[in-house]
Image 1 (cartoon, rainbow, N blue to C red):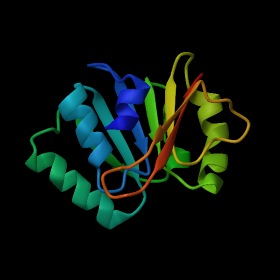
Image 2: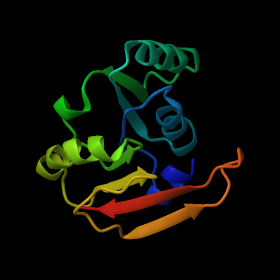
Image 3: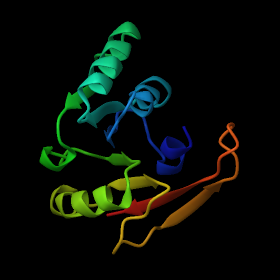
Length: 141
């Protein structure tokens, strides 16, 4: 939830979660923030699991998961992107984002920075409730 708060997600905005895993960010963005949220997940089991959860929660009008490669998607409609990927993946997706994202898009990266970009805000989370600390990086295009 801290990622979405730090990015300042507003009702009706289009949020993409790259590597959406179990879909928790997509679901939170739709439920708590009223965003139109789309996850991109390559792993078929996680895609199926998160899509099923969205159906059960009756969020299909505002939340969905794309089963596919994050490098092959269209992000031109994005207002906010959430990213929790390893540095190598951040480096691979960066040129795609630089080419597609419109001015003003907020990108929030969890734990790993985008090399070559300067964060406009860095937020430290001392304890995530499970004893781990995290760092969030907010970028604005």
